[in-house]
Image (cartoon, rainbow over all chains, first blue to last red):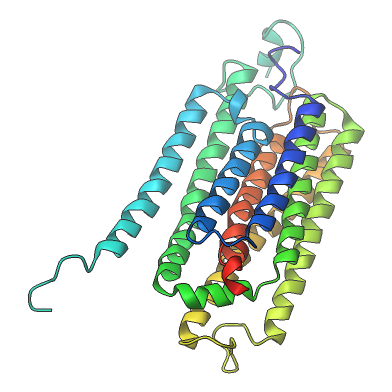
Length: 102
Length: 228
């Protein structure tokens, strides 16, 4: 494969990743019926993040992408984390301290 | 115009090396980066809805649990599998175009298109069910059995329709892109030297898949164990 051809993985790799994604989908659906209390969300999101990584790294070829693209992606995810994290901290901590006059 | 031939003598696809780039690889890396930057803006676009969902779920956990359990988990899981299949066929289409296999590109793209349309068909069936069950927010006859306040249940279904609707809209755009790609690929437009449209449409398609990978557990799964 010359450098003029984009980086591709073998068909075998793609099939393996695809099967892993299907197994993860069946797993997350099955686990949802088990009572894990508050951990249901954690498990569901952990599986979803694993699936996201598989799709991004293999199907979207992030593992073959340039360092610049990878940094941009990381930055994007970081920004999304700030959006979620900071706002949820705000909402969950609003009534911790009494506000005089309210 | 003759620039292409000045690179190593061999003629390059006219679109593979445009004026402003030094090498074919540079141009390709550039379009990949550009597409990713667009996808990051999409992350923030969907991110707002995920945030709204998280906040209201924290505020009305019981109502959201009942509303979430009213969704059909098997249809949701089936549609997830359909979308994952479409991602697989899409990556195979990108691979085929990178290897310059003309017939295979069209075949894989058509399969992706078919899976995409199947997903949308199932989604339409699901939405139709919501109308029959009076689970559509904003309608005077809205009613979700066994929850109070009904307004919170309306918020759940408003978020459900916005999130799945926005996702479906992206799918519709994706179907349009795929149709165009099939048409172009049939005309032999994509070779191993130039397949950027297939490549970046692939990125878009996989991104839409990732959004669903998160929508499925959040909307259908996480409160399932409470419904028993």
